[in-house]
Image (cartoon, rainbow, N blue to C red):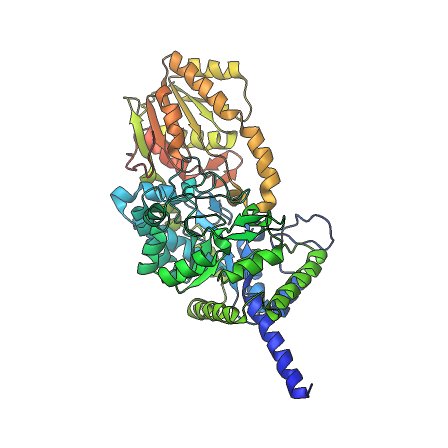
Length: 589
């Protein structure tokens, strides 16, 4: 081999590795200097990770709550990440608003979420979709974060959906499309790349793709008018920078099979389906932007495929970026990453991965980076401090929370007109939520009244019943379904999530029994649905009044100061200091 031939071969090899590196988005949620199970948050960039980004031409990173703990620290981290890369880096986060918000709620404005925005649509149109996305984008870009995995445009048509529910704008595909388009426009107008999710739709599932592989058996007609409709409309009106895949089987869209690591044939998840991710999304729906997988460590993929096979199948399906394809937590993981990356390069050389596809994919990535990231300068601490959670942003947050409150039922119980010496008994999921609503009610009533509390986390039934008997009004509240892995962080949190669910499993039964007790003793009773309002059907018969808030965020917890926008809004409506103008964005039997 001549020197010139060798140089060309080395250049081609370098190009392949650059092409592959740009197609990977890694998470550095935790990093430890030893090889033990690591739960040490990565808040500053260690040299090993900076070297990995540069050496392997990594295209992007995703940040979690553990990475974004304080304003100055976040700016230092995002600046160091960019400096470690020879090309502009996608720095992404899940900052949907509501239950999925990674940045400290006491600092950043996190809002009450998509379903609350959906509840305001009849009166306000897309006003809050636009203003919420505008605020989130301004706050993210001030921190050096340039990709937001939002908006969620899944049409929540399944009351049992464990992972989407209040993250959806509602059950009407047209409304979801209009509000999603407004958010895409606002995010990208203010310099943050949006990512529609989860294509081709995660709204009608009863399985969480973090913990299993959902399957949607809709007819093609139903898929087009429901699941695909928001994506199709937004692509026509306001093409987003990114679209995120769903780890879901859609046999009517693609019934072809793939062999998994157990040697079994299975229907391809959408993430690995060229028929869905290329033929449908690009050729038929004319999407020209960047596609990215949902996290590849989720059980919907990782239970069935090795990291290398998952990425190969994903890239062969035409997806541009593999999100979280392999853990990097410690020096041992760094060595495993090298093996993983070499296997991908070998897949190109042996024809398992198509180099032409890699080139086209990189062109889309480079075009998006040029269009969006070239305008973003180095973040400023002074600007970020003036931007995050500023009074104007908090005002919009409070306005949305109030505009969303929905009066579902009222048989002359609301508003509560408490006089001096009155007694209200609260039955709440936990003491923190109880403290937030109690404080908000005392602020709005501003009289010498008694508010007693039963926390469903731990209570004595007889004491709870005594509180109910003494009360003039009983206000109970609940939040279902329980949190998903997406809300508390990701796959690293599944063990915590399991213990959380076990501790909660008896609460609905206890709540129902206390409601029946209050109903039997003819107490004036109000039920507040703090999350997905489907639970109202079960509890409404035992209460004369029902409200829905779609959110239970607690943003400030300092000793006795426990506050959240949803609780302030609820207290205003309960006491008659404001009206409830929201409408249910989903149907309830």
